[in-house]
Image 1 (tube, rainbow, N blue to C red):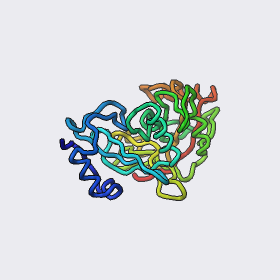
Image 2 (image 1 turned 180 degrees about the vertical axis):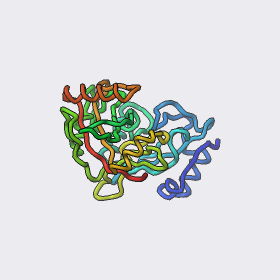
Image 3 (image 1 turned 135 degrees about the vertical axis):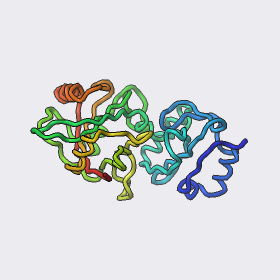
Image 4 (image 1 turned 180 degrees about the horizontal axis):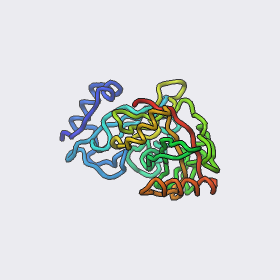
Length: 257
């Protein structure tokens, strides 16, 4: 039975015309799936569905997403991330979800006052514990994983954090699209976090980002900051997280406008 699948030119180039045509004909595509972005059920026979190919250094995994969550695309991931996802799929019998870490990250934009000047900031907090790829258990390795990438602990928000080169924040047409991290072995940057749909930011936030040409990223474990409706409440939550030793940060160069 034909599927309501979108196979982008990039995905087709990677998997080949024959495999792409089989997918579109419904021969190799699942009817039901768990969306690799929002992680809720989908049905490629009933609703528009994107094919998303996660490519590591040595292998690749084809996954599926609601077309409204992600366009069909090729996503570069580390081999460790990819193999960790495959192991979890095998162990738990779940459909491919090579970006579990990305799928559960909550991102809030706001302006943060430091030394009398407003800086654009992104506050990242998972909705649940983040396990190290390839491991199982209740532990939360979110901050240690970020520390390994160069994010530094913040105990008091009084100075602008150091720039983390190789990382960047992608802003296009006034909307927030992604946080990019360095590619493996010097390859092109890849998405560490990607918005399901481009996120609107305020005029003030965008102006501050263009002025400083960088965005401050703060991150905390699940449940520390929460979804704060106002910037003053967000700042209070950040200060408390910092004082409690549960905050890391870095300044990320701005990509786009």
